[in-house]
Image (cartoon, rainbow, N blue to C red):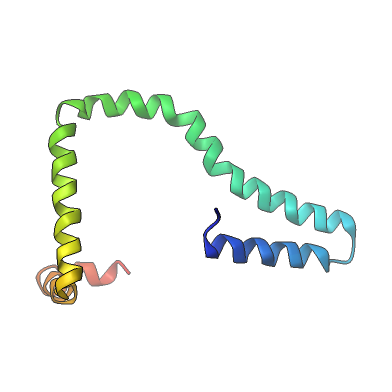
Length: 103
């Protein structure tokens, strides 16, 4: 199921292609849109094997990373439930001012 953003983009592309002056222009718009959707999947298919070979190096520490990531997700969930996420974000900005430039 497509996310709402992707559905909106598809609607816009289809509408634009439907109201273009010629059929070839509409076909070109839909072709470029389809290519844009396909490229990430093609890249994933091409680079999956080399990525898996590199990730084998992390296999030894993978279990620890898995537990660490789970602990972070759990802590973030607790912060959201207790309303402390805003306080955490302000603390991070005060402690690491460079983070304000990222977004």
